[in-house]
Length: 465
Image (cartoon, rainbow, N blue to C red; front, side, top):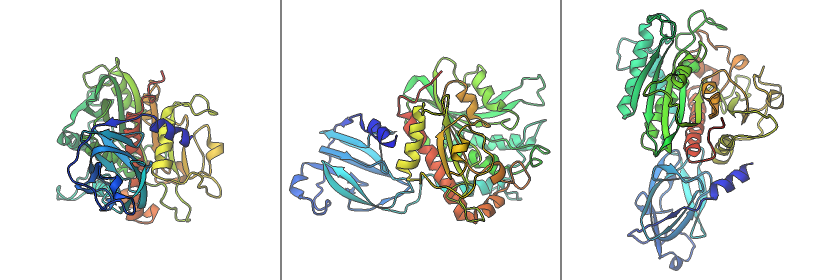
């Protein structure tokens, strides 16, 4: 499947016109420099290959002359704010400016082709643009309570119900984050039972306009947490894993996506009332308002972030890895891969991020909730097309969107689920330290971020309804 996908991504031929000004003598090792004087390829204002690239970062490049470059999957090319799916740029005569993005999972020497000749780029550890460290610092700020509001936010107790000042205060904080980045941001309140003191949902919707006005796509996470007394653990107050983790990931995605170009109008949503039956995302999808989901445009895809970080590559106290789930849909036939977004998801995980395909444990990961569970119950990286529900992606899947849902340990593998023990400190303890937690959440955030960038540029990722 991955070779077929690679061919599909390489199929388009990208012709770009380029011009540069400084020669590249001496930067291609043993290659005959006399064959390389016709063109120029610079990365961060130095001849390509002269300096190492930093993993997890983007690097500006410029090309000029008669030049063609081809990079492997683990190197990502961005031109005009969008990923070049083929990894190939062919240029004749006019400057091409873009970025090279290196995922944090890539280090060492990587070979690329320049005018058909092999060239090595050195990759060293960098400071990822989406990092587990940034995520942890934001998580710690949101979940910590102290007297100095510049040191800790204390945005806890975010459950829906009768007027809850703590939830309203958190909503204002999250809204300010998106507005501060420049997004067109709205608060959507929907009251279905005619009692204004008990809102059915309060959601934050941040919009980014796309090149086309005919389609829409999005990402999201629920920002509410299990209310006191809620099953199965009695409710929570931090809701660190479920779902402050996903909420913070959306804040980090928003920071990076603001500078990217998208094909379709894109919403970044923070939903409420997920714990009460997906009422928040459903309100956005079914109501008629200027900033609700438009009913006259194609809904292409939606990516969901819920309960992540206690997952591979982190290890349980037993030494076994925690499970990592990424499930796509809709899945009408369990015997057939039906949706192109499934191929995107697998390509990102296994070809770009180089995750292991067949890592298993002795035994199983507890009771499963998907139709393939008998085939995958001992599989650590459970990345496949499935019917799994239980979160806000179901709202959009029911409308024909192709969806991806990311999930770490749950139920039997996370005994703090919906309990007062669902805290950031507990997450750290469960995976064996802060660094391990940062590594785990960083992997899934990069997977989701790249899934969005690639699905955005894959026309076959379209509504199936």
